[in-house]
Image 1 (cartoon, rainbow, N blue to C red):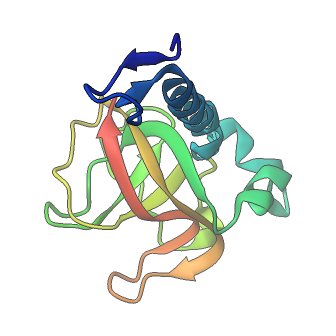
Image 2: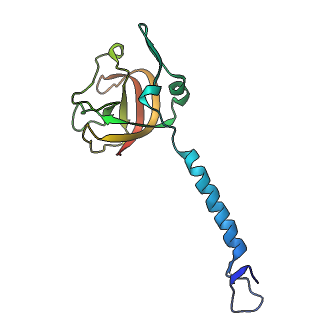
Image 3: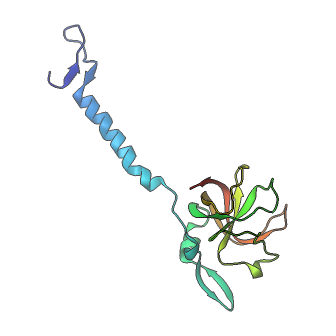
Length: 162
């Protein structure tokens, strides 16, 4: 009867609440909570994007190659968008006052990532740190709508101000 915290009013009836049942449920909750950090997307920093940069160009790091097509998190700053209703922006390592858009991937700066949003969100000031979460893609790609060329992208993304 020690395990029975609340008992039914009838003799021989199943207890309404038992210590054993509570322990089993708490163990299940603890197991779920312990796995939450493992469910978080891996983070990527600007310093981890390229393995080496030489006169022949930039080579993506093994980390970028390994995280390709996976959901990642990345912190940075939103460069001023090309137009107010755009569904993409450039994530930069440091705040920028001007748009860092390039005409080709040959001129691609090493400290920017193009972010394509899964849905439109209000843009934030260029000096506000944000966290972007989305699918990492690398390799030269031209946006068919804008003609914008990128080497590194986070697609199906969302962001929040930190």
